[in-house]
Image (cartoon, rainbow, N blue to C red; front, side, top):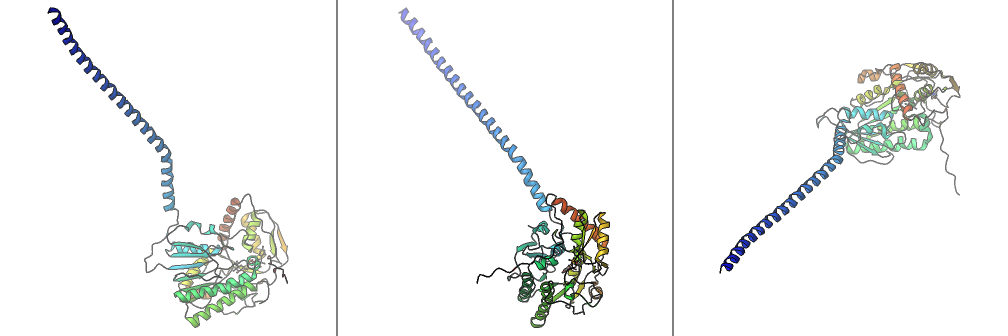
Length: 420
Ligand SMILES: O=C(O)[C@H]1O[C@H](OP(=O)(O)OP(=O)(O)OC[C@H]2O[C@@H](n3ccc(=O)[nH]c3=O)[C@H](O)[C@@H]2O)[C@H](O)[C@@H](O)[C@@H]1O
């Protein structure tokens, strides 16, 4: 009996112990599971944190780059005036990536207009207008004006044509097509959309002049079959077309007779006297004077011309207007001046004179002064110094590929051989 009680007591204790032990084991188990869970969570959280940190390390510089891009994107354009809808014009600028055209594009853009530049890039360069690409007021179209163009515009500045003698003589048929068919196309567009058209004509319509200085009344002295005829006669007929469209169709036209112009953005291969002399002087090469150097020219700086073109377009003068600087120099004087301003020790080399080269040229700008209130304001030396600075930079830019203008005659394209 006693034994039974003892056994019962012990087994009672054991049962309690067992329960206690089981409870303890359970608690220990739960604790260990919780521990594992929490440590796993910590590892996971740490891992996530590390991944986030790594991602941040990669993203941060990208984010900074995007910010820089956004800043440069919004700040990269020159300041543009705000014009109300009423005053803002839609302007087409043919040859707008060229030397004069790109400076005109700058002025029109900065004045707050919507500008569409059309260029076939024969002598124009994208580089000349790249600072406007992407601007909401600016459009660049790779197009040859020999083909029709259908856009809506209020004004057309028609500058498209090679202007330097070696360039326009390179492909005389193309020069003729550009100035004739190209001008017809632009006049057709002007008629269709009711736009005003300004033709960039030239002092070359006076040919080798027998009247000096040349006023707008002078009819000119042009050899119609000489090497310059493709340009001279091309521009003369372009003027004729303008006045035919004005009289017959009521198109509003403006005609600027542009005299020798120089400045930044002239092409290194341009071949005209200013770029040739400056590049030759900068590189210590002989300055190539064609003929005796006694022929004369009067040179205007490009910013003066651009102001004159805009004044003429917005005037009520529909007859031709000379735009040029009347300060006349012989080409030899000019060679010496450039040599001095560059501080160059280059020699002056005399080469055979160019065929049909105009012997004297100087604009009479009375009409522009009276009717437009315009006259050139940039002194010759100041303009030349700016241009010397521009060409020095161009030479640096092309340091590994320097170009020395060669005194070569225009390249004449030969006809294709006939097969039968
Ligand atoms: O500069 C311009 O705006 C004008 O240039 C040219 O007319 P041109 O006067 O013959 O221009 P250049 O080729 O610069 O020649 C000017 C004078 O310098 C001479 N020249 C030219 C280049 C050279 O290396 N050496 C040299 O003595 C020429 O024989 C000419 O007598 C174009 O035909 C015109 O359309 C344009 O308006």
